[in-house]
Length: 94
Image 1 (cartoon, rainbow, N blue to C red):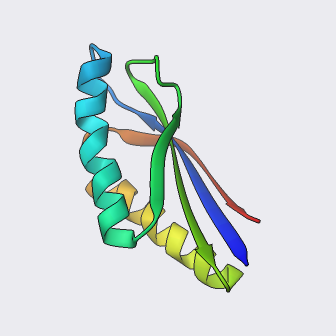
Image 2 (cartoon, rainbow, N blue to C red; image 1 turned 45 degrees about the vertical axis):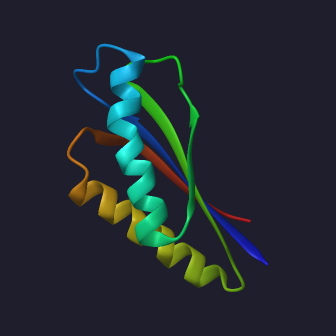
C-alpha cells in the first residue's frame, strides 16, 4: 500500500475575512474531491485570511500511479483555479 500526499500552500489575494476565505476554498476542495476522487482538506493556516494550506491524499497499490495522479491535481489547480495561486507545493509518497 502506498499513500501519496500533495500539500499546497495557497495565497488568496484580496480576502478580507475568514468567511470569504472559506467561500473561495470550498468550491476548490469539492471540485478536487469530485474530479480526482481524492481526499482533500484545509490542514493549516485556518486563522489567516489570505493563506491556506490544503492537503490532497490518495491510497494506491502503485507508487507511480499515486505520483502521477497527484501531479495531475497540481497541474489542474495551477491552470484552472482563478481565486489565487500556489505559493509552494510538496508531493510525498509513503
